[in-house]
Image 1 (cartoon, rainbow, N blue to C red):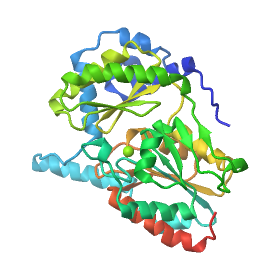
Image 2 (tube, rainbow, N blue to C red):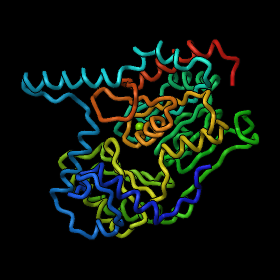
Image 3 (tube, rainbow, N blue to C red):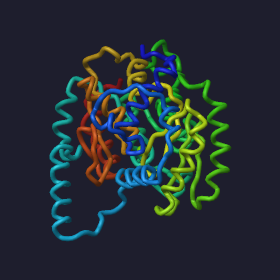
Image 4 (cartoon, protein in one colour):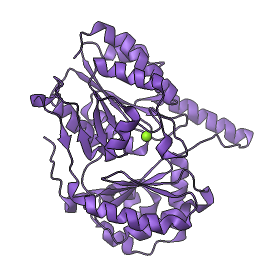
Length: 365
Ligand SMILES: [Mg+2]
């Protein structure tokens, strides 16, 4: 079983390795050389943060949250179109590759993992209004009738449950740090509801930082902190892009006093999480184990998500050489997913086709 008591000190070391390689905020000669360096986050943040670094970070978030195709010169536009073509060759549409996927799933149990925001619901300005459509809910309900299904979200588990409202699913909230499964389903080990919270000890600290941060960001119009129980989301969705660097700076200043918390970046959001070695990829592995599939060759795990935090799950699937990830994006992005879908409406179509194609041949799981 995955180690449930991940040591914080170990996580601190690991987290910096990840952060330094993925964010310009932490870029350094050592990191760019690919060498593995061991350094605590506290140490890094003691260095003076320059405006240049913060701006570089904001640029990185813009690149990961493209909302439109930029108007450019014809030659640049041609280059972008070539990039798009090349990207689609390497990460083809899951709808266009549907027959191949069906063939791959023959004789195997599909296990479905779904992110919520940007995957089942559109990204909207007010995160409290990121509702999923009734049609999408019906599609997910049908999928769950035929395949074990989990929602894996950065949101608080209760909040994502209130959006989805399907009691038959597994829910992994707070980036997998708060997992609960349905009671009495035959795929539960020992027929018990699964409950797993590897970061409980951080709850008071998360609440404290939420209060401090909420006060601090009041000077940035549109900024908002969402308390996701085991992690915090600082939303940039309603903040003028010119103020993104300012907001990032404010978050960094607060986090300087909390070395046991780390910062990750998503689509128009900064996530503050405990430095436990836990992410959506670990949650996926934990759920597969809970379902009794840890050592099974006859499964096909499918993970659909739109965000950087979903990459941890895509990576796990690549490493296991089992199943595949599907990235929801209209724009080329670096990803470990095998396939793509352009938007939530295509996710719905894919789920519906999966049930039509696969569900009819199964007696249930
Ligand atoms: Mg998402």
